[in-house]
Image 1 (spheres, one colour):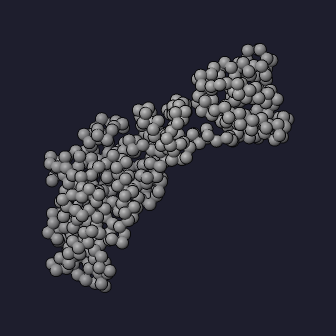
Image 2 (cartoon, one colour):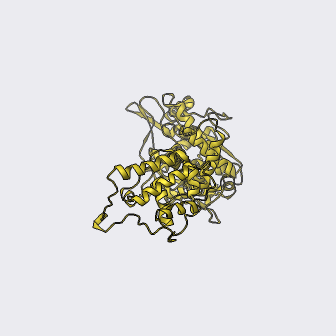
Image 3 (spheres, helix red, strand yellow):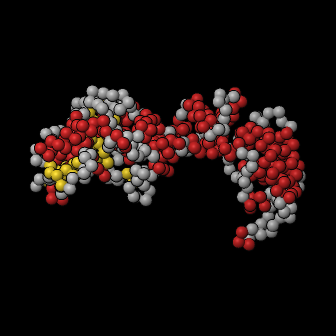
Length: 484
């Protein structure tokens, strides 16, 4: 190989440790490795580096494989599918690892000290012909002798990895820059054992917003945590692909299958890349909007069922409710978790209104208006399709409220916020009972909290006024509520 030969099928491996969940850094390694295997028509091998039988955790291994599948990455050989070079769990290959360590001792490449077996680093220099970083030279006097078999008789990681890469005929190892220091040791071990070492490609570090390396033990950057937070695999794959790689055409949106044709190592750089949660959220919002309506609906229903906010099977009325929710919030949310939070808010009987906003509602005109709105809602057989922009404005005018004040008072009483979906969608989402309960709670607080006496000054001693009435019928209606 010169820079990297890709005119033949390559065998590449992804070797996660079940001691940790699959995190962003390992997931990027898996993605890049998978893409190269698919681009060259080669083989993507999953090998679980669980050290020894005692550390092999079936549930942890299953979680890693589940996360890989969720990202859309399949494998040709692995612990669950087998293959011609198995087994694919490190502890199951322990006999071969012990034999490799013994061979180093027999050939004089290793020696015993303090019960452990140490590799004898010869004088000289090892140059790593890195497919990303170029040639990186390591002087042997900076490496020092290192352990290849621990005092408890267990072969060390480096000799296990070298023996397994050779046995599985791995051509190229893609991994993060943090593993670069291991590479000259693995090359020396491979040569001492009579193996041709694979080529290596070390991608730049992934850092957080603080520019520090992401920790593999940070649960927030685990793939499982991101899935549970409501991110889509499509968005995560896009973001992972752009951590250290850039397409020739500069675009940011592509399906996994499109990446296979676009990805190449010569556009991977060795500089640090920032895992930006805000950017991922933006990618995810775009991916949600691009979903077929049926899939968006199904994903939300599944989330609601997991949160015990929806029955199984889903009643027809609930399907109608979800469709209304998607009309109201579907293009605004960034994640399914955010969507679920809106669902939970809509299903709650109580709503929290900021203290100063409650003070703005504290007068008899607003109180009587909200009571009239309750009566209006109670009289409606169906809350969908109501001309709320007109009807609520007419009711407000009866009590001297301008249209924008009337609609704003209703929204604040129902949601505790100034902004949100059109009232025409909010009303059927809340339903008769919750509208009545929420308006009743606000009215009760106004009456029984501290009465109708308004405050005269707000924060900082500034003059403060409640919603002010105007003479009924004066036409001071203000702008319409969008979509009301």
